[in-house]
Amino acid sequence: MTLQATKNEVSTLADVIDRVLDKGLLINADICVSLAGVELLGIKIRAALASFETAARYGLEFPSGTNYEKVAWKEAQTGIKETCPECGKKVPVGELLGEGGCPWCGWISAKVKKTWEIPGLKTS
Image 1 (cartoon, rainbow, N blue to C red):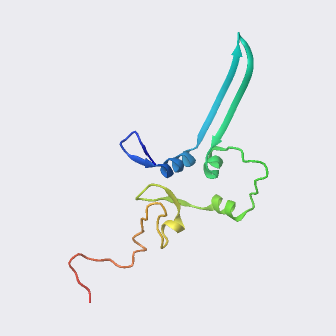
Image 2 (image 1 turned 90 degrees about the vertical axis):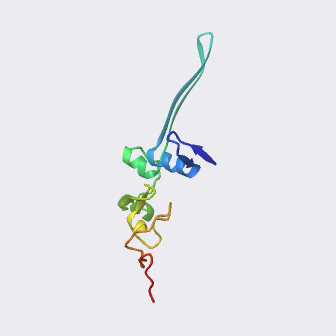
Image 3 (image 1 turned 180 degrees about the horizontal axis):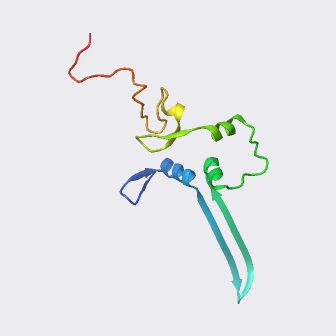
């Protein structure tokens, strides 16, 4: 499934979900059903959809019972992320500069590349 973006870019569903989790989405709705001026039903909806990192950045409250002592939570708090020069997504530095490169687009750092080939030069 592909979605057409406004700048003539084609985005996949994974790109859209990644963008929503990175930026966050807030839904705020008030629904009122009334008959002859008498309110019969009133619904207030407040919902936020974001990654934990984005929620923490904007100061959203986490669910009760969230265990902040877990290893994954500590890694998320201390994990330094860099932007991939190829796709622009935030990736942990160790992963981006490691052997695998960017998990999203496959970009590999020049430091990791072991062989440099010069066109027309044969090595024996």
